[in-house]
Each structure stands twice: as C-alpha cells, then as structure tokens.
Length: 422
Image 1 (cartoon, rainbow, N blue to C red):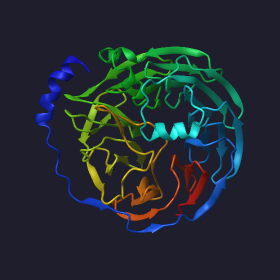
Image 2 (image 1 turned 135 degrees about the vertical axis):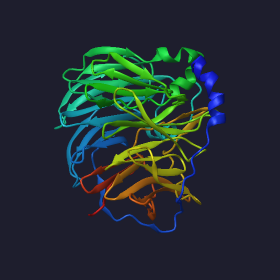
Image 3 (image 1 turned 90 degrees about the horizontal axis):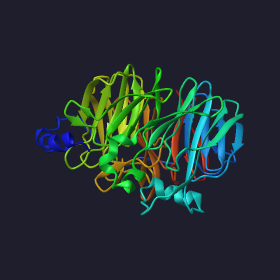
Image 4 (image 1 turned 90 degrees about the vertical axis):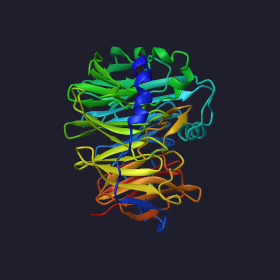
C-alpha cells in the first residue's frame, strides 16, 4: 500500500458515515422446495466442473479433465479431453472458447483440493504446477494449448478481438488467439513492491477477471485496477476514487451501459464499497456496502441494474449507484454456500473461486446459500428483492449459469438444468 494511502486511510475512517438505507429485506429459509429438474444429469465426461460460462445459447463447461459445450436442451454438442488440473476456468464469445488451468503441487485428489481451496483453506507454502492455457473453436476444435509463462494461479481468460489475456498477479500475459504465441507480458507486480515480503498473501489474492472493453483489457489485483490494450501494453492504473482507496478489489468489473462497475472488500480502515467508472478510468460514483462484515463476492448486470452479493447481503444498484433494494441474511437465508463468499487472509479479503454463485434471470436472483449444512439456492424477486423460495440442491454448488430459459447448476455430482419459465 502506498505512503499516501497509509496517511489518508485513518482520516477516511473518521469521515465515513454510511448512508441510511430504507426497506431492508430480511431473508430466511421459510419455503424450502425440492428442485424440479428439467434435465437431472448432463453427461459430458470431463470430470468435476469447476467453472462455466454461457453466451445465452452455448454453455461451456470447464471440467477438471476437459471442456465441453452444452445446449439449452442439455445436449452435449462437443467434449474435449485435456490433462487433468485442480481448477479450470473458461470464457466464450461469438468466435470461440479459451480456458486456463492449474494445480497445487503434490495434489492427488483434485476435487478435494479444489473444494478446500474454493471454501477458503489456506496453504502455508503455495506451489503451483501445470499452469496452462488454450483455445477452442465454438465447435470444440482444439486450436492450441500452451504452458503458462508463470507457475501461478491463473485468472479466467479474457477474449479480445485477436488475443487472449491471462492475469497471474505478476503480469497480464497476452496470447494470440490464432496460435497461442506470446504477444506481450504486461507488468502487474510493480504496484506491489511494498508487499514483497508477503508472498503468501499475494499467492492467495484474487486474480481479477480479464474483461475486454472496446480495444482494451481491464483487470485488477488487490487495490489496483489496470487498463491494458489488447496487445498487453499498460494504458493506465488506478487505486483510488477521490480519496477512497479501492482497498482490495474482489469482484468485477462488469459493464453497465458505458460504465465499468466493480466491488471491493474493505479492511479495518476503509469500508467495503462499489465503484463505477468510465472506460477512461474517470470515477463516476462510489457506494458504500451495507455489509460491514464482508466485501463483494459476486456481481452481475441485468437490464439497467447491477446486482451484487457479499457474504450476508444481496443488493441492487441503479446506474447512478443508488441502492434500489437490499436483502440481508436472517437465520441463514443468505448465509453463503460452501464455495460462495469472500475469504480472509489476515486483513485481506479474497474470492477463491470464479464460479458464478449469484445469477440473475427471468426476473429472479438466484444465490447459492447454506441451509442446515448443505447447499441451497435462495431465490429473490429481481425487481423488489423480496424472498420467493429456497431450492434445496442438496449438493455442493460449484457454479451457476443461464442458458436459454434454464438455470444450469454445476455440482460434483454433475450438471443439472432447471426450467425458469417465462
């Protein structure tokens, strides 16, 4: 953290007074129902799914033993076997698919290791091996696969017009989409010289998703938001909105119209918050989070709103940063599922998994929660935030996605599809 930040943080803590929020909705599991699966088992034969992404028509599964494309009807359109890894992440656009994967050294039971990592288990000395990236066509044709330049935890890939961006915490590595050759390796770590003696913290920090916006890639690491061009050249970096440091960026950015919105996890000096800026890195607004216990873990855009979840709250913000509604946990109604939520390494928060564990669709918000020791989905009305019901998945929820008019739910027992109707 910079000397300026250390100077102003105590002052900010004194100046901060949270805005009074009206209409807080208290959520508890008052109506628990069994899921009526439209498709109870999608057999892709790629091992446990650790991440998935959808463009609305094609659902791409990132499994520990491969990648698969699935339609909204549950049919497996293609499946590609790959060397097994502990965690694999994926991205999809109109041109194709990219993936990243990595292992903790010495791990044999990949699912046990992944579940421990995603639920916040720390390791004393983090040694990564088998870090790889690759690209596929939309038909599943393998275009290339390559060893990563650094044996570190890798972010999900960002898909540019002709390049793929991968963030490691050390750098943003940009690879050519056509053949995987290295275009550039943009520096990330120079902003963290003060953390040079905290390598374990850096190992566990959130690798910000690489988000293409226009001709640029945006990503984040700890308190910095970075803007690179899609050839990997640093264009700008920022760590404060006015005098408010981002503290530790743990979710986003996502695009809301012409704004980029992301959320932070605060510390003992600064509260957690949400920020919006133009692509030129000019800040437009910040909104303090109502959750004083944890920071932002998931963020999504639907219509003209941003929806965000912390460990114990779900909120909806409009395009000016005003909180339209806020729902809070009561007796477990929004208590995080085994893999959802911000985990803490000392004073630093981190998101350990990139599986979307809050999604918005068909007028509802689906949040992965816990009820009596196993994972459920708490369902809220997207317009008002009111509680609708709890769906008892009765298995660990690893990732959620929308495909067509269905909700895809990935668990270690397989992929299931739920009709949303409407």
